[in-house]
Length: 405
Ligand SMILES: Cc1cc2nc3c(=O)[nH]c(=O)nc-3n(C[C@H](O)[C@H](O)[C@H](O)COP(=O)(O)OP(=O)(O)OC[C@H]3O[C@@H](n4cnc5c(N)ncnc54)[C@H](O)[C@@H]3O)c2cc1C
Image (cartoon, rainbow, N blue to C red):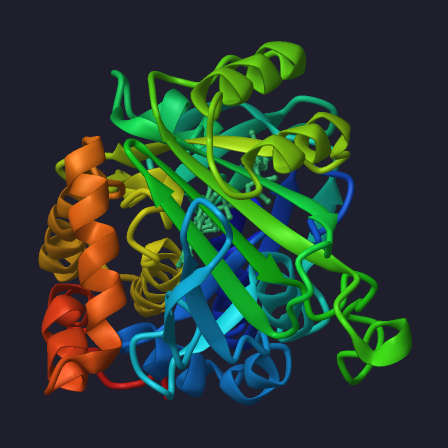
């Protein structure tokens, strides 16, 4: 029986575990966190990733958990709505699934058949490839041998650091801070966006922070409304500091003088227990396999959070790697198959990184004017389709091989 170690139990790790275990492999998953991480922010499943979700049999369950955002409004510095889109901001096509990252991890985790070994609260300390075996030392769990090791452990991957020497993380000059705050905006099933030179504030109602995967149907909040909102702050700058107090200070400095709800949200950020600050960064490598070790998802080819494509890429990568492991292929087949998909998506992300916010007051005013005019423009649906065509192309830039029989 083929023995596979997966490091990381989020999107890529759970998807790979599900596919491999279903095909009869002996799978061990080691995850640094004490449990599958809940919550997070909204992510998107679209294009070829939707097809993978269908093939894996998780699309219907993911749809039950999707966010219920009905529209997005752009607001000015006084909070006045200047234009509205009839959908969540990352939803390009009506069939796309927008879902909280923790909920999607949970859906994938539930799809993993029994028999997989889960080791929480540990990590890979050393890897040694000896012929057709990989000898792995876990920090707490001793020495084990596997046929393959998959690094699904995110943008700061430990497996990548051990098996792919060199620095492969490229910061794109901006960061994202995400946290939960009380819904003081009087909105329901809605997203509000305010853009300023070099900065963006987004507030999105949270369907139900209390919903857990254990409940069979996502529940509504007490009273039926959204008690909380997910706040996303996008801002230019270098790598975020590691220390929390310094992180808070760096976000405060970036949003000093911000309009709309800026000052109130900074107060909420200081008290937020779930503040998460991430660099908008890409992982770039010429290939994602080294012998019997492979990288999947953000660990190998993070496109940056600015594309809305990282989750889909992690899902597609896991599906393709599973096929090659099950077939006993040379893993370089996985590199070949993914190459163009990764390249197209990372290129699209570079455009998003350059234009995530207006650069100057004048550019901000021009942007605000075009947003205001958008609803009155003839052919605005065509314009929206043109604006999102690169993202749509990137999401579909791979033809899936036939399903594992
Ligand atoms: C702020 C933000 C907003 C985003 N918005 C979107 C969006 O709108 N749409 C979209 O598609 N994508 C979005 N993304 C990207 C998306 O979250 C990632 O691309 C996706 O989660 C990648 O999945 P993954 O499984 O490869 O890695 P991750 O989700 O990062 O999971 C890595 C897992 O490995 C574990 N781990 C880490 N280190 C170790 C270790 N040493 N040992 C063991 N386990 C370890 C972690 O605990 C985690 O469970 C966003 C990202 C960020 C940061």
